[in-house]
Image 1 (cartoon, helix red, strand yellow):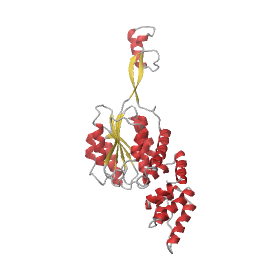
Image 2 (cartoon, one colour):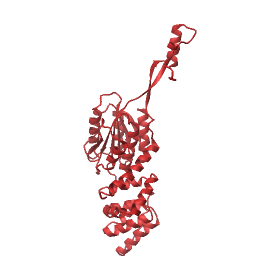
Image 3 (cartoon, one colour):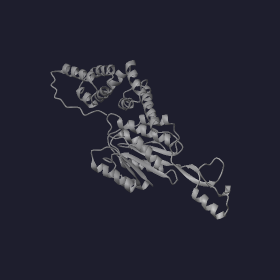
Image 4 (cartoon, one colour):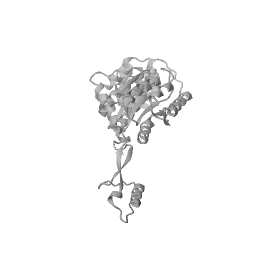
Length: 354
């Protein structure tokens, strides 16, 4: 999201110099949030609140995110104002992902009055983005042979020709025509999304957007959603009927932690998939493969007739190998992304082709 910042040596003569330097950085431009987090380290509640108010004035969202790492309660109080709400609402109206990312960072610090307001803004961005990516009309279809009826405009040419020749008639009869009727391919799917290790909320935001895309496309099917980090959480059970708005709210309010327990995510997802006795069943796993809790996830493939894997960017080559193994052994497709922003469109492609 941000260009790599050039590290510069700073010499502080006191707290006042540090405050002035942070003020100058906030006013001058939009750096990586980690720059503002580092500069605000050790500052008091009051100082961070004042710096956040300055960031609101100059519309510097990365600064607000960085300051929230140092003290989310001070940032939440500064945003609990007309200026703060207006800034976030303006960004949400443009579909800026910083609105949901900020909500994920501050949700435990927001009070009972402001929390639902900022959650609504976060949901607004996610739903708007999802509508831009998908539509409920894009679904896999199959064709079924049927007798000709007025209104059916798809035909099996080979079968029609064969009947015509068998009847040895010089005139094509209605009973010779074999029509093709479109049938929706009903699906049963479970999405298992790795939300571990997300400091600024990007992964949670992408998870919410991905789930919204899945919800729109599988609104008439059975599908389940499992999020996992240190533990797994079933956000939507496979037979449960939930409106997209409520489902996104559940993602926005879901638990977060730092570790990666792929095995538990697969176990939770597999148990949901087992509740439906249909043929066209599959799982979609989104992870970097670098598990550090729960053990090797590969034995959990027994739960899945088919498992597709979307591999997240990772510093660990062995994690990428785990993802490839899971897709290969699970009889599914493997897709590797270089950015979280690619995931919803990759999911769309998998849903169309499965």
